[in-house]
Image (tube, rainbow, N blue to C red; front, top):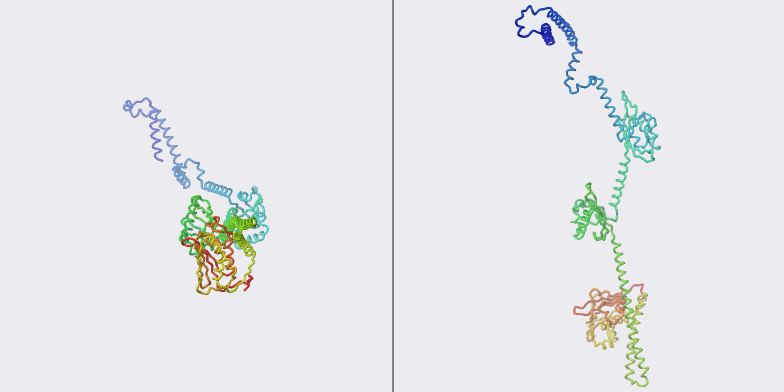
Length: 602
């Protein structure tokens, strides 16, 4: 404060000099006498200035006393500090403690109000009776209702299902009695648009200063989407579980390297291990190379296309219809591959049987056509001979000699026998197909039956100048059989051998004694039978492909022979000779055991 008075005094003194003698210069000032300075004007000005100084001194002294009081001193210090703050330009009242607290509370209230109105959750405040005293806009959005519809209404009428009202009222009462602070529960409410909404209620108690419950604050969350997702997930898991437990389908889950991630019991049974043993193993090491390469190919195809692939193939000894499904990861790439395989072995067998039946039907149809063509030829040839030679005899009856007549009748007789043989074959075939089996079994020699068959074919063998070499066995070759039927079998075999062998060739007949019975073997030097037709030649209306050269034959002889040998509990088969030609063999048991459902005569 003293620096203020010194400064003021100096200013006033200098002013006095300039006011009194403004014309005095510096040069003349030094020559003035001291007494000349104190003129009337000077004294007046000086007195005036001294009065100003005195008044100023008194004012500042009183000011100083007031500033020394504690309140003023604190206010001054506060003002000094605030002058250094970057906010010193704001009005002073902003920084008053009461105003600052009010402002903060107001800001917090605004913040909470914004939060309550904008959050997606519904907030309800209810009293102990369940009457709603507050509802935020979130609850209106959840239930698609207008604003302020719930205030003053009963909570149980709007949010609790009718059949659950008493239950929830009792629950509210129990919460109050037990002083539970927080409780959660789930319920289903009906929105204004008549849609069912799944809600989760988080109930918080509202306490008074004495700690007693005065009401509840409910946070309502719409969990409809979560519930639907959970239901879909549970349904998907249930479906997946049902598929995994499927008793007939094989399910296999692999990663891209072929490691087994999951299997069902069917797959585990096929692979011969338990489910626990298979998890984590390489699938490709557990199956054949063919199946492993097939599955690798399908895995690569699924990874490349990200599409399911369907294929058929063998797996574990069965035939399967399989689908490889891609399992996508979060990045959209294939992370796993699921194989679902359905056993179609029976269907494949049926398809194979149908194809075979179709092929057999087509083959039978073709064979029947060939049979009819051959039969037409076979019937026409002897009939033509009979008609021709009988016509010659009629025309020349008056002048032909005995030798000519014998020749004509011999040809007629031969043609008639040939025709009768064809007719007998047809009759035998008809009997076999109708189930008529009339056999007369008795003990007889197989050698005798062979010799009879050879004598029956003497004319045919002489015509082609062929030799039949039969070595009669030196052991007892007696068997129980129908003599006429076995002679017919031997004759049929010899006819085929003669018919499909070249002129002047050899037919060799042997009888062998085996433990299970007697074996008859007839070998020729004819055109032979292809390897893949050795069984087919015994089918009805069927001839070897090498025999379709116009040599004749109906294709019934070996088929009839097969049925006769079968009825004797024997077996007949064909073999291909190493140096050309074919061998037909059959075996007959010494004492066949006959079935009761077939009529046999002993």
